[in-house]
Length: 411
Figure 1 (tube, rainbow, N blue to C red):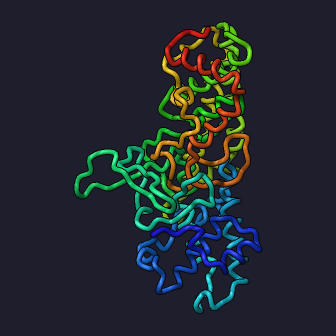
Figure 2: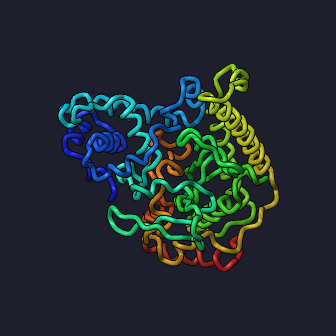
Figure 3: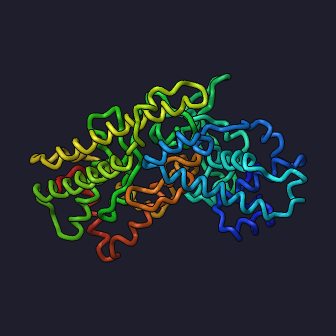
């Protein structure tokens, strides 16, 4: 049994609509109502849920001050706006709906926390978020033993990715995200997490929309995985040839520098958005208890600033290179999929639904709207391929893609 917007009573939908509440706020109101209903089909599951959470909705003022000084400040704004809208809608609803137990601010904070941290999304939109009892107990692990796949509308299938022995914990990979983001959204950090910063996308040639978003890494001297950079390089080369003909080596270098400059500027802007409130030193002396997370937040912010500075310096140096970096002989998978005629196909099953909240936040330079679920790059980007090239030119692009795939030089 799943709980989605379709499960929410009309009285809540109408009240929420009058206040222009977000889909997550609506779903949270519906869950709060289910919590006071002893006959709810979700009653047994609700009893298993934690009574408190560790996400940003439960942070102290000091912790909120820290988060507001980072590039995740929009999460604070959006989540608390949702909570405020829930309160306004709940106050004007008929008291009889609450069975003599009108929702308190704490009840609403609890319900919204469940939606924000335990929901799944299937279409990369907040409206598609749903609660799936028991599935929400799957914890995060970068080496997941289970992947998710859509089965039908309002249904989810779990597929083991390796042999599972009795007593083994089943885990899914929430997404590639920094510990700072995990702390803000969930209140935990991942040991030896290689990812940092915040995923971002950069404008450029249309084919680049099919390449993965940029994500920084602590464990690589290149800061960003070269396979991501190389996909964007190949996409720019193909776009150039489609418009102007064969590239020369100096033109390939120029295209590479466009990418390196854009990444440098993105990291510079993210660094400027990571100003901790002064005086920062006082947070280092926090003790444990309820304020323990403050010290962890400060450490992660400091680590992020170092990583972003490394990113700026690394990609400044790349712009000074006079020798062309090797171009992979194998065409990047998203571009190869276009070449094989699957541009309009659905994304692989494993990439479609996802634990809420990670890997789909607004790209660098985009809006600050807080979306839900993991956007499938294959699904969201590939449709652009059909508008990129007029039908009369598609054969030429196919030839260019095939040349790259076969390792034929285009320099």
